[in-house]
Length: 269
Ligand code: APR
Ligand code: ZN
Image (cartoon, rainbow, N blue to C red; front, side, top):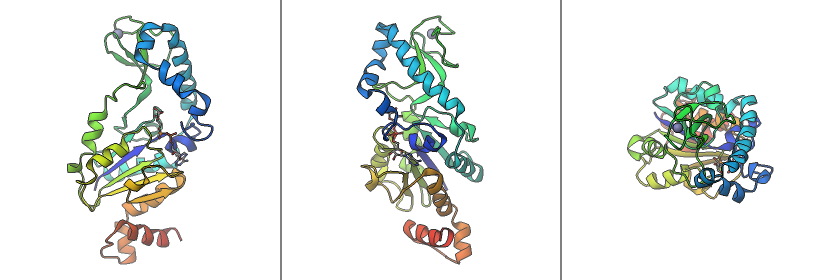
């Protein structure tokens, strides 16, 4: 069985990290258009003073991330990897925090990069670094550097890997694509689900866990509107429901809904 978890800012919200588009989120505190504008590569190249603003934004975020601990949703997905192996449980996130790594997850694909790296435009070098203010590249000494995250308008370098992981050829029956805590405004989860949707095996499932409804709910076989740290256990019960079938003597539960109904009525009554 294969599971791919796509996660957005909502999975880290219960660890105390702000989401972007919720009320009081990051885009309530910063003007998104201004950020989009000054977070542009050409801006950094021409206006190094813009860099101060960018590093101030990310250093603030970085300090919050340092204090944050993984929550039950991160830890449960780490359990999925332990139970089924890191080759069968892949994690893709648009988050720049390291909460999956802190939870013990392996091979996490950060499609928007991470904040524990710096990137040099001059020579392309990337190095582990606490965001600092000398900005100098450790390799070529250039000052044209930025935090190792994707800026607006930049192509996500890991997009090809993400697309390959989600290719319909990799999914057979009883495989799951689980999206957790994303408004699906930006993360490419829904574009990839749409792209492969008609060729995915009809016995593989798209599940969405999100506190609020999204414009992409229709893409999913099952939508759980609620907190990631609670809904994740319902998904675990379904995914690992082989023991449940035995317990209920259910030889073959034909559809995901019946899985959820049976497991919920049984496990979550
Ligand atoms: N449990 C489950 N879902 C939650 C929780 C929670 N505790 N808290 C919030 N959510 C949901 C919200 O309902 C919202 O739909 O998480 C979603 C977060 O949406 P966004 O803030 O838009 O974050 P995300 O989808 O990850 O997109 C963020 O957009 O601006 C870019 O680069 C930025 O990577 C970032 C991306
Ligand atoms: Zn360099």
